[in-house]
Image (cartoon, rainbow, N blue to C red):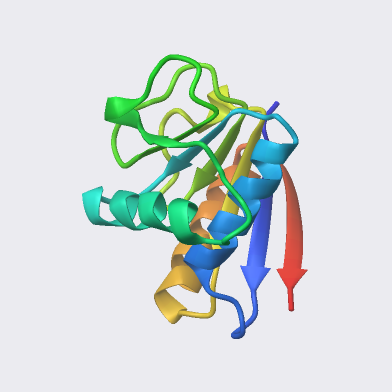
Length: 138
């Protein structure tokens, strides 16, 4: 069954910056990652951040519509990726395909709407019996 991790950020953390850090860690552990976004604009932001996040790091990634088979990290706002192990969900709702992944990462920042939407997603997973773990990031 899919494991779901909620990362609750304090005010000193930037949500998209934290996504870049998580993507780098996941890539270095050799897992296949898909980052699910809300729209083309956010997909573009994540794409740019993964290129510029740190001077000394590189996370090979592609927007899903341009991805070659086997790309270790893909980004999309609408398409379901094949053969990935970890999903970072940045969308406001739970994607229909989440249960195909071994692990789902939900990142919640201090913005009120983010917290409300995060609570709804938490309840969705909990009501369906998924293993949930909270990580408070200070």
